[in-house]
Length: 319
Image (cartoon, rainbow, N blue to C red):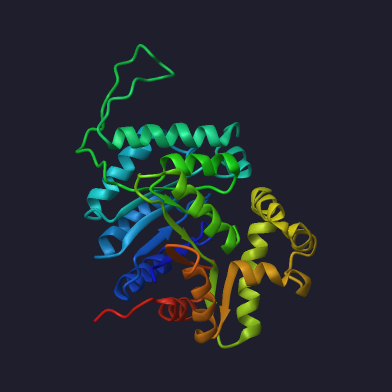
């Protein structure tokens, strides 16, 4: 049983994130993942977490391949690797059209190709290679100006057919969102089979999670998180879920901005909520499907509920 904690890009309370990471570190979690959208700069926050924690592996979960150049990503990853004493995982993803075009003002064209190209260049730079410039071929190519870190893991967020191919070819880890557990298990096995003798891909995924003895309140939190992703984060997640036989349920959520009983399967598949015992049982279903179960913290959750959730979902208590 391997567990991690993940915060969403909608969580912008820096002090709460630091507090959660320190608690996860104390309780023996293996990973703490920080997402990035249009709020906090996750790389700066990860540097703060590197100073505040001692053992837990910190993950950028994930950086967009559109928002920084491959050289900037490589410099940042190598720096965070050194600041954390080797406890850093670089997560990369193709992001969404809404974020890329609406926030970064960049055309969203051929995202899988962009993910492959940026990942390849970042990996080469971290390995210490000198890459020839493509936009300005006459420029003198440079290497990373600090020691190479070929051992630094790169995880890729991928759900579509083309991006899954990139992950199978290039990733050390796979970090999908809104894929059903049986689908994650199936695709993880397929990607590892495709790699043959190469190092296996670490599969990390999990549900939005909240521990609360008040089941009505717990469901409301889980429903709000799910509704935000399906109704206010562009079309990628609705499309991914529709492709898994959940189109009718997604339409209900997008039209009502709630999770009615007819769409309960969305909560059953992608959230874990209720009492401590109920949440532990629900997380065990993810343990059977992935290498690392990532416990997603809904944004805006009060600290007592965050603490209760992190404590209940911990795989072990440090001795």
